[in-house]
Amino acid sequence: MRVLDIGEVAERSGIVPSTLRYYEEIGLIASLGRHGLRRQFDGDVLLKLSLIAMGKAAGFSLEEIAGMFGQDGRPDIPRDQLRARANELQRQMVELRTLRDVLHHVADCPAPSHLECPTFRKLMQAASRERLVYRPSRKSPRTR
Image (tube, rainbow, N blue to C red):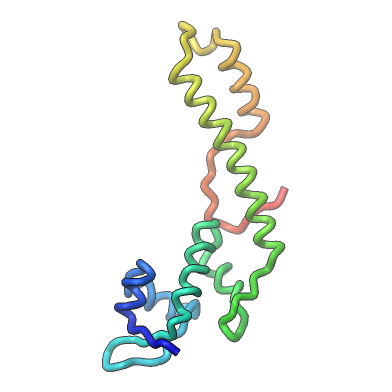
């Protein structure tokens, strides 16, 4: 078992020591103890930190991520939550593509007035049908 001190974990993971201490405080990771004043971690903490980073990138809260680890600290990821989050991301991608298309068209439209442009009007209708509103989600995934 390879033991890493907090500085090496921070360097290899790209996560600052204060965040590592916070993750330990809330139970996401656990240190093995201390060597002097420096926390020591099992080398497997790097994999766990990667899983935490992936969960955060997917929009899960730290509390939700903590629930994805069993009592033994091993991943116990509820697939239904992942599926729901993937579906939410897909919905957001559709909305963002529509928003991107609207913005490109508005920027490039040769019509004297956007309201006179049939393409712009079609894009606006599509946007209103999709309830186009960009909402970066950091909360629990919603299901439709």
